[in-house]
Each structure stands twice: as structure tokens, then as C-alpha cells.
Image (cartoon, rainbow, N blue to C red):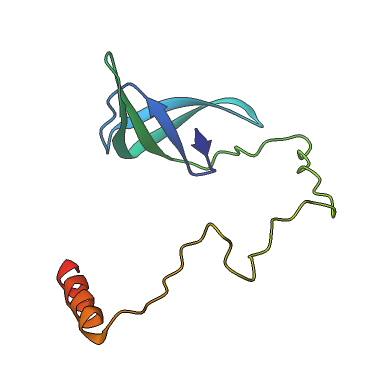
Length: 119
């Protein structure tokens, strides 16, 4: 799934317990390499009818160059004429709810008491 020079996050159906040592094959800029690693963390991410899927964090015993060689993929061009959203209305539209009368001081105090009990 993800890799760095010192480790990788992988998904597997094999139960990998933390502390277990593994030898994994890594394809990097230098070619295919056999790298010794240790399971740093593992947890269940998905339960299926026929399998349990785990994510495991692997810690390499040595630095592995996982940098991708080649050219950078350009980001999509964002034109200056990008369409902007609509501004907030200055006044209430006919579909908005408006309250004509304000709450009395007793009703306002009662709602504050109820709100404090909910917290």
C-alpha cells in the first residue's frame, strides 16, 4: 500500500503478529531485493465471509531506496477562469424560516437548564 525508506504498510490475509521477523521481496529503483523486516504493528481492517484482512506496519532492518525513478506526473491545470461558488444572500429568501416573536426570559432560562442537563 505505502512504502518509505525504513518501512511499509501492507494489507494481507495472513495473520502477522507484532515482533515477527519476515523476509520480503521489494521491487525498487535498484531492482528486486530481499529485505529482512519486523512487524511493528498489525490490526484487522476488514472481515469477509471467507477471510480476515489485516494492515501490517513493517520496519525494514536497513534503508531501502523506494523512490520512483522517472518523470513527475503534472497536476491538473487549474485555469484562472475557474467557476466560483455563489455568494451568501444578503437577505432571507422566501424559503427560509423566520421567527417573529422572541422567547420570554422564563423560556430562555428553561432551555438553558435543559441544555446543561444534556451536556
